[in-house]
Image 1 (cartoon, rainbow, N blue to C red):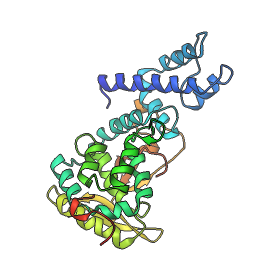
Image 2 (image 1 turned 135 degrees about the vertical axis):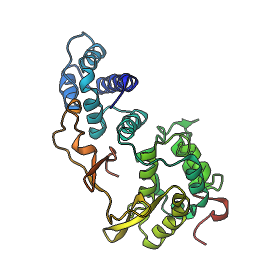
Image 3 (image 1 turned 120 degrees about the vertical axis):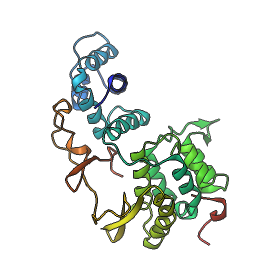
Image 4 (image 1 turned 30 degrees about the vertical axis):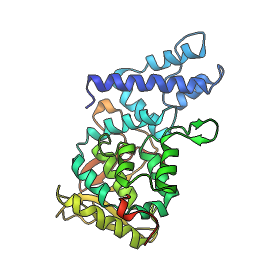
Length: 292
């Protein structure tokens, strides 16, 4: 359950989302846009800003969770950092398996980064789904100084960054939640990111030895569109396909009732885990460059 600090955080996020919706709407359409985003209609105010604030203020503490999750699902009015905060609050409530910083750093040092560089566009799409890459700010009108631009310049096009430094810049080692890091690994070895079965397995072979030390592994559980599918599971677990993401756009039950929104659920043998809450979906110095 979300504690008092979590409630305060969610309220701030809902207020910021309401302000963003206000900025892209008109007086005539504002209530329609607020309701479409899952917020109540404005309760008063003369300016658009005042009306947006009244809408956010009308959300009760009991509904904050539902409204915030709805904003993430609809991809409406949220900056990436707020989206990540909501996701992490949901995932923390599910108690995912811990992945220590030492293991994460060992993984980064072991990964053959040339595979990720060779699939840079697809890999970058994964990064943008899970991490805040910035807005693409231009320096003197021509150089992208955002994290996205730095990754393109230092990791994809040049040899300035190792995979370990990429992980550090993303916050994947020190800041990412356990569930976010697990999704990062699963996405990295997916056919959507690396449409090459041999390369997928090469990544998995590099990732699994560090994971073995904490009792986890990426296990092949099936295939999607002809490419192997891998999920993070406990070493020695018997289930062949541990997780099935259930992404629904239907009605969400009230958080206060103790049930979690359907679009946030995954089923695994009768247990439920939070889904990605995301729209659609290393390079070490010795492995730099393209495939040897």
